[in-house]
Amino acid sequence: MKLENTKAQMRKGVLELCILSIISEKDVYPSDIIKQLKKHELTVVEGTIYPLLTRLKNAGLLSYYWQESTSGPPRKYFQITDLGKSFLGELTETWNKLVYAVNQSTKNINQ
Image (cartoon, rainbow, N blue to C red; front, top):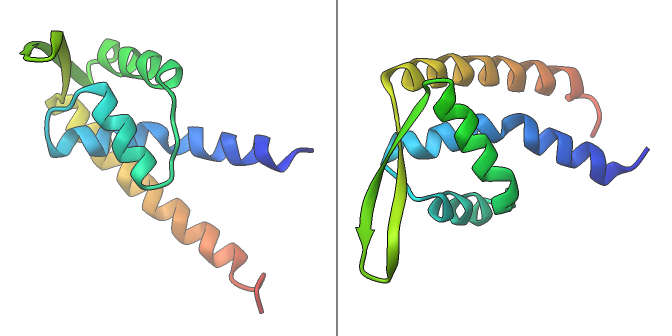
């Protein structure tokens, strides 16, 4: 069993939560999402993020609009929908419970 595979699966598991959280703060362009994730050491490539954004949009959690750019073609900006805000709230609650459970289950590891 390879440690890097397990780490990658753990990161993928929280990616929706992180992306919805970023978009809930303000409308964003996909490369801005990637930059913010990298800043917090959660490295994601475009080949991962675009299909995920499309899936979240198709589920009604995100919408998008086009905005003209001074440095090239128009850009697609994503925004969270009311359904997405509700979903994010439930994901956050689930995440907090999971973090608590994992912390409790592993608290004796470093003792």
